Amino acid sequence: MSAFTEIAASLPDPFRILWRETVSSTNDELRALAEKGSSEGLILIADEQTAGRGRRGAVWLSPKGENLAFSVLLRPIASKALWHRLSLAAGLAVAEALEAFVPVAEIKWPNDVRISGKKIAGILIEAGVDFVIIGIGINVNSTGFPEELAATSLREEIGEEMDRAELLHGVVSRLACRTGEIGIGFDGILKSIRERCALTGHRVSFLSADKRREGVVKGIGTAGELMVEIDGITENVVQADEVRIIG
Ligand code: BTN
Image (cartoon, rainbow, N blue to C red; front, side, top):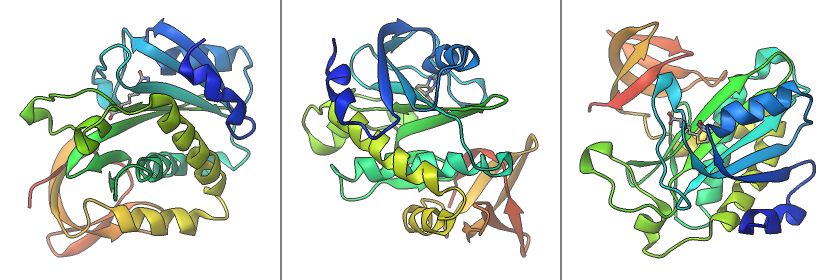
């Protein structure tokens, strides 16, 4: 029994918790459960991942017992064409949950969550034929990040140890709400993301189709895309990686 299983009873339906001390990657292990037929709402949370993964094959490291590393299984009823919106919905849900503890959490499109300009959470979304896995890593109680990582944790921001189960409860509550808004309700997601957008007005460099490009971010478009002015023309960028603020 962990603090996580204690909050299980108060999670919104159909969310429920499966806690493991050590897994390879919560995304990988939850995918295996999804493929065996687990139903919507299963949350796999681990104190330690031995092969935690970030986007573009990066390693996601998190010291045992200090932070949050979990994956959520959804079987969206919305059209598959809308599933990519879950990426924005998840980033927003994490930012909103963090705002119970800090004044504002920014979103670095598509879904890195930042506080005071430093990354506090990352999200890795992976889809199967009839399911989506939302993998979330949040720095809760780790401290002393190397300067070059430009990372922070909730503990570093507020100066005291945080209850991981309480934060998990907040994130799941916001996820339950926001993931239900990818169809009707997406305007509300967009509005809330635009209010927290860390990129608008900044010059950025990003990878798109494996090509590095630069431009000034004009905002987030109606389909959730990044609007970037490049050489005087505003382009709608739907997919980009390694987005860096350079001005
Ligand atoms: C990123 O910012 O690159 C995404 C990081 C996602 C990390 C989380 S931790 C829980 C889940 N399991 C994984 O292996 N990765 C995600």
